[in-house]
Length: 120
Image 1 (spheres, rainbow, N blue to C red):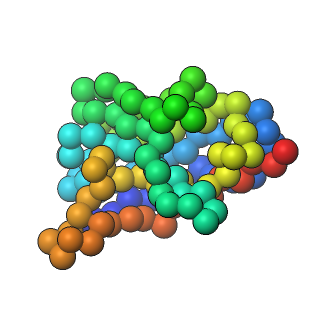
Image 2 (cartoon, helix red, strand yellow; image 1 turned 60 degrees about the vertical axis):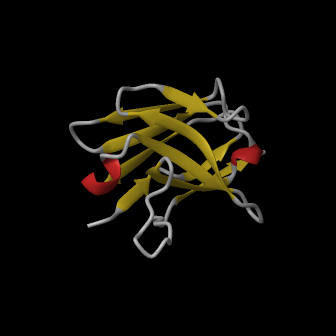
């Protein structure tokens, strides 16, 4: 079964922190890499952080030094620690494989996401 459950979003003031969690089904978690994506209002979804099964990480320039991605391979969990949050980080955050899991119909799978709102 293909599913992810993202949680941990909420409203936070600029400069604050949040920790997002993602519980992923094995069919997704077993991919070479997992990632956190976000979709800002009116914008396309973008990849902000990735982590391989071995723990190698990569970040978008916009979040480098502020966000930290991690994973628990025993629990099929992925996390995103977000510090020094800015209003421009306001978005719906999604967890998925990198590249995103794709059905045989060529449609990408996406969960419901979790909303992060950063007030100024």
